Length: 114
Length: 113
Image (cartoon, rainbow over all chains, first blue to last red; front, top):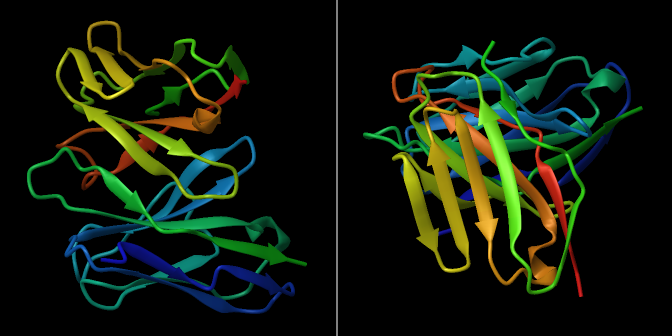
């Protein structure tokens, strides 16, 4: 099992460009999450999907959109990238069947917006 | 606002010593507690979880939970240089936002040979 996979690993964008970060999990988990991690700020939740067909905003959703394509895949889209979106992005998944709801993380995407 | 607080460190301990990492949380309804290890440039990796008051041991790691004091700790016995990493505390609530976890900002641990 690969666990949680993310593509791409690295990306450089110019301000105003768009891109989609891809995430897939093979653990049959029903919940998936997108976080960003910045120095001194810790992990902040952008969006999450409790189950296939549902998505909800997290702590810092502005400037992002998500799609839960199926149970395995959850993508994050930046429509018009800004330098403030320079960060490391992590996708995670969790099985909500009875707790304790531990989350498993992908390897991350390091994004730079110039 | 639900918060999880950790001392940012760095916490420096000599090889072979016990490293003690602490975490406090604000939501009294929290029910599940996690410790993640994150090496520089890598993703968080789950080390342990605990949801009952008391101690839980796994190899060199012991998680301690005191819900009355809203306090969680992680002890690492016989610390090794390979334990040098940032340790993230995370807290969850079964009845809360679809299993969402609140993460602390992490404590950086340095184990000196």
